[in-house]
Image (cartoon, rainbow, N blue to C red; front, side):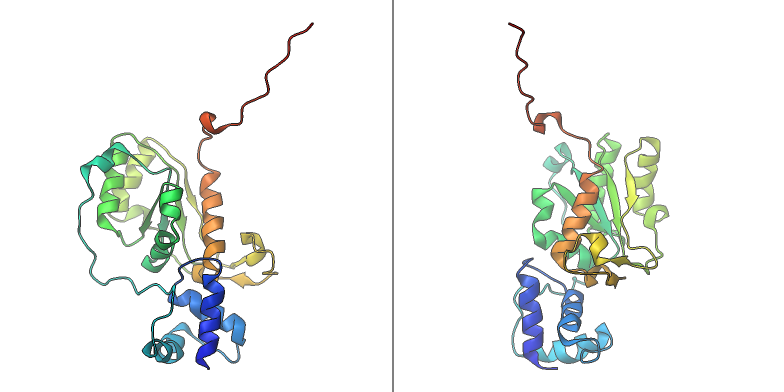
Length: 235
């Protein structure tokens, strides 16, 4: 596989989102090169063509692999005066990093955590907020093959126990076992191609789809509603 195919795929991803994962790049290369010309698996791609390309220099927009050791920095106590508008749980750290790098976390007041309990300070902050009475919709975004549901596992078991006693919407936003078509996710040119991995979806499409689902669960803010025209009295 020629390196320029990897660079072309990266440029296509970067045109719609400033960051992407290694698996995003793998699927983009497969779409450009065709399934027969591309490596059959992500592991083969990462150990072969991608490793060779990275030896020649960095790829702009490509996110680094998640750190093996999580930083344990504590969040400032001032954060306890706030709470996100929505919380998104994802099944892998790579997907979490994708949402964070996109900037949607700040613009949409979104908290993104991974099913392994990372980042721990953020999970602790959410637990404190829930115990203090804050509520926000929760979405769980995962691959079609993911069978782990962390609602019964710590550190999320305590968190969802609080929600059971004072409910907030909790929805499964994961891909179904038989996959989901790109058209159903909102792609205009994806046709009926079915995806089974979150990172097979272009980052901008995955992020916008997930945010639409979460926004639909949030209560409407009367302050943001357009003003109704003033009624004229009878003459």
